[in-house]
Image (cartoon, rainbow, N blue to C red; front, top):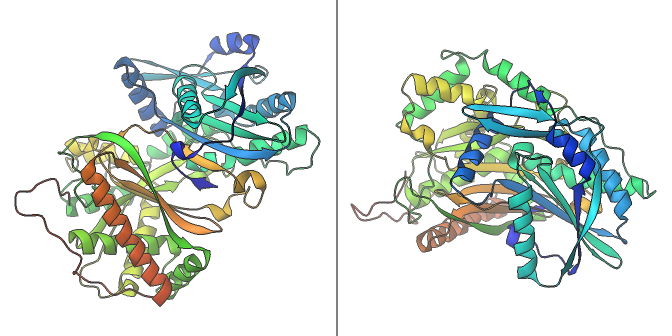
Length: 485
């Protein structure tokens, strides 16, 4: 599987098939009773923001999708059965929500309700036409206010078909998307009589959401985890991390997202980088942060690294193969200045990343509430931080099977004020995907930044280390503005 821009996904032409609930299922789902389980914190924020965006008449972009190629003619009845089985495995996919004032209300569809039928939506013959079609489906159908909050479709042709799935972000995260396409393909294979692995048990996101609320209540303003967050933000003037170079935006301004992708290292070079990280006393994940910290230092003069990372929370229960939103956020901070080499910085990055994992045991909403109450964070609570995520896709259960190998994962593209990076490793390469503002200044800054990061990583992989330099540092003239530190 590779994370890529949605525009890079252009399957071969064929017949467009859509799966929708039967009329009886749709009627029953609309009358589904209220469930007292609260949404998770991230779900609640997302749902309120989505409702507000709808009131403003904005196009819905808060979805994620995944697609793969499957050999053989599609058996639509088998796919209908596979989809029903998939939904029954994941309770969150039987939910829909409504927002009333400041409250989010959950409805849960009964297990016997999900049933699906196929609709022929015509032919796909043109890449641009297909992109318009599928983006419209995701924007209109992959929403949380009507069941189902996901879309499933196929582009069918003799001898093969493209299977795609997309869901409102309330029901999924990056890990879920990495799991879903292999699971659907396996369920489909079993339905057509081919032998495929039986999916492992999957705990319910509803259980997770209730437990998250209970866990948050155990953290007070003096908890060690919240104190650690406070210390990091106080040392950084109470500001959320920003991309270190000029993106052509004024403070608080956003621009439409432009997805940027870059190959970083091939398989052998990635293994060499991994070995260099271990030799320096760090894991690969920490080494990535060290390389980013070096890039920030050499290009922007940032003497310490400060960022927000995304961490999985699936370890809190039987959620390893569950569908839902199982993440938390935490700051990563470590000193760069005063070091001469990557080998000096990597142990600091390792300690910073391990510390982030420890303090991420506190749900971020409990933390932000405490930091808002004591004044550590004020207006910065409304600022979206620059984020860095590292995922090693080699350890997902579908790896090695065709559906996963051929899969592409993409997100909706709204607006941003940063250039957050998702750096990923699979069996073939290390690569990055970034959500950047679509401005001319951002395009130049991001290209420069990614090129230098690639140089740092390549040097570490080839030489086993990297010697820091300030030769690349370019300072803006006084008063030029826009450079966020």
